[in-house]
Image: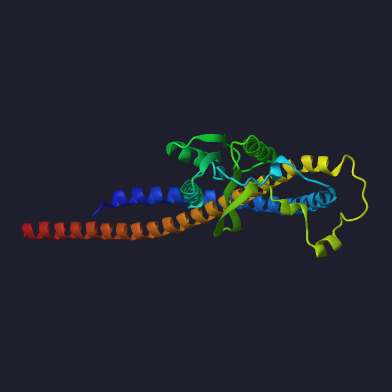
Length: 295
């Protein structure tokens, strides 16, 4: 059995650890609230972007743009896993890596080549450790991504796609559901689906962009400018979802860690009291034995 002093040191150490986990939980909760606000603020912009592209797409007579090119023979696929720069977030990073590697095995089983573009230090380090060649790596912003970060990622994947190095680009990230639930999502971002250029008849009747418009420049030229922005918006939304998921997972993990630390302190305190009682009992027995020896 450990001594009373050893148990006291362990209790003190666990209490200090609990202070840290509680502080990390509060920080994660504050960051989560900000991330939720940013997601809410982005939704109207994303919806308006979709409406604008649909309206311009209907006005364009013929659309043959590189980002819309649907290739018959998909030989190479780029996987873009969105992980965090830090750990201590439960299974947040691990489930992204597992899904990405499972996707890689599936694609390779179909005879396709896989390219990697890592986002987040955890993803980059894991892929480098597994000797995967990276076509791009972006780190240092996952706690608070900006639109500029999404632009950099979008520019790289668009470059790979239009250059013919890959025929498809897939994002793998955590969609935020709640602090307790994050859903792993696979989203094809390239080629951009031609479905965004058209809506059904009922939507067209109520579309705010419907009517007689004069486009300047021509609709085709406007689409050339809008589609890269659409790609950036999709990646930016995924980054915000991933950030909210990371903070939610970290808040939950730190809350559980604090709870476990409290339970461990109670257990150690009980063991310390038993050890102290045993020492007192032993001392009493020694005193009694010494007194009997003197009589």
